[in-house]
Image (tube, rainbow, N blue to C red; front, side):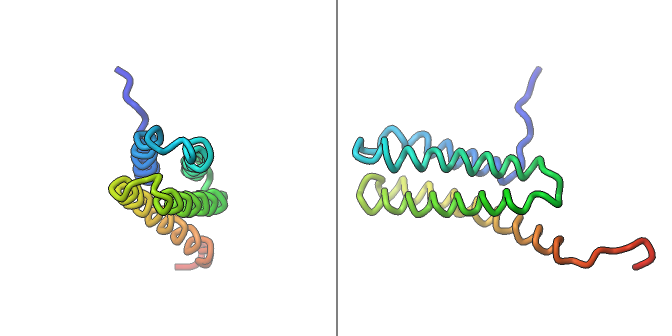
Length: 129
């Protein structure tokens, strides 16, 4: 039997957020569905791609991918705010999606902090303890 691959926790949360967005996407009014909502969809997919790439990249090379994922996630949050302010996304949907994206943002921020800490920590040589 073939099981789906085990995802990083941050990727799992990001996937869940995208699935919620995917459910809401067709309900967005046409005036925004093919412009703003389409752009949100693309950027969310790019955030998933950056997070996935960071997960499978050597430790020393992860930081730029994590930073890009954070930037894309922040952009999505702002664009969702515009959809909500223009009444193209109702309160309940906006809150549900924002909570999921905030959790992903905290996870990415923690990952970023760990990478920075490891990058700034002094390298230990074999003689040091």
